[in-house]
Length: 347
Image (cartoon, rainbow, N blue to C red):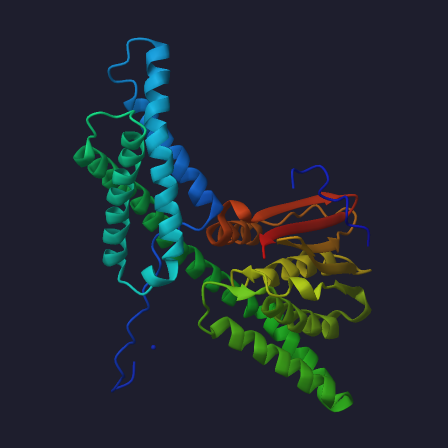
């Protein structure tokens, strides 16, 4: 199946006695190691500095001079805050949420003093406003930390919605009944296949009910998708043609849990089920430098005028964005009877 040009048009119920619940692990509330976070932090600080420079500026040239002066202290201070916060990432993750926020604000005050020191050393700031610089740094870092805390909290409802959506999808009546009916039909004729099918079904349910972490490897997602397609292969027979093109070097890439399987399920639902002739499904992975490209491609029957709701695609895109921010790319498109989803993540 030729898929390389599909996306060329895009710019790619409680027991009587119970043990006490374990204390949840602290979450890193401000991860400054994301490229997107760094970019937004610099732009935010620069915007504040630009507005601040307007006070007392009579002309545009005066404003530009003040902006250059303030940027000379604010930019290094912001970069120092980001570098230190990123370097202390593992240490900060051991602290409580409140303690992490306090550390973040304190680092901001230190960064403010650093920026003031830089300007003072080169003779551009006399007398040096040390207290004002520390207060400004603490205030700006507090705003940044608050924004990052909100972003981290946003992962919880997105992950919960994904778990509920995928669990509901896997136990939806027609899939479960069809799978069990297939197993019953195979019990006498081909007991080995029936046993394999039930094992795959059991693995799917166990995975759906299992507590998931923030991320899993691409290899884990591939193995889950293979179990799902093995079940569907027994159901649809020759109507479903599956091609795998997997790059071993890409297997360690991190993805949100239950990300790949709904895309494969969509390919079966919209490609195989509506067509008497069936469909071709191709899953490929490829490492490209420091990133990994994942493609899920399927042929679509001619005249299929019942497009999906897009819930699965939107869910995948949103969770990918929460994990990888601007480093994660998600595109999809239909061209010449072939539908493709393309995902790019950092390795």
